[in-house]
Image (cartoon, rainbow, N blue to C red):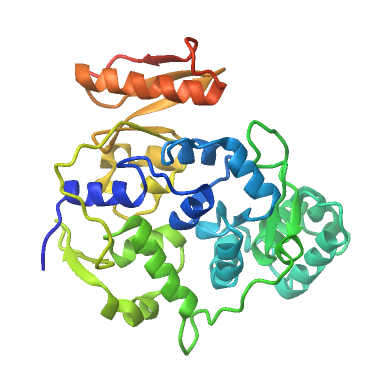
Length: 370
């Protein structure tokens, strides 16, 4: 079994994530290929798509949101993801048990003695009544029924996990601020989520689709990486069911890695351009072993909302933006060529963030650590 070193895995991941070269694919197809983009910070997917797609226009994503062809919903890892409407409908029920378990992992004590089916039905009634409420408003409405419970556990925690909902625009539109307001997924899209076989007996076509889709966007990868991406524990049977379609490798730790046979695995020496990643980008978070893209010393930054700069395909710095000015803080020493490439891409990002492709885009690259 061939062993793939970290650099080979890095180049494969960059190719699957559309980060090795910008793609001409459409925005909807890109969101589908990536299996969605993590999006609890509403503006971050725009940077993620700008870094991946040639000529990306924010108005295109706005239109997809307004036309209900993409949605913002709690899905993988119980985090808000921007996914296609088709994937939201196909995947939501398969994630339901995980969403409930993760919610109870935090709020079990607050919800002790509450019938969750009854709570879900009551929450659904509140949301279906119209007005696209916030989860805080849902929670306050439910307190009258469960007066000894707080609105946050009832609404923002429980109902958001138990009831398939979407965050509706203007939340998630380009340069638009606004709180998260909710509609039922089936009302917003005009049809109910597809039934899923879950982890019970029998075939699991949704789980099998998740395996294939994950490998297309993240492979080669181990089963632990797949679980880290989606948060689902019940996928071993799905992996076993599609194993005959896959090829196997080993990583330097000796783990078995699975992959689609015809998926791109570029030469490890192919150059990787500088790329700016948004907060919580799945190119980093979508693995259990993230060393193909980030050093263990900086792993904690990946869950802290830090925005990363990739140099030679790996996390080499962080970036912030204020009023269109981009500031880069290196995490390792940059060569002169590194600094020039980072500054060039930073100026392009500044121009994207400010709609200014003239002389005003600003970027500052800080001193490298000693």
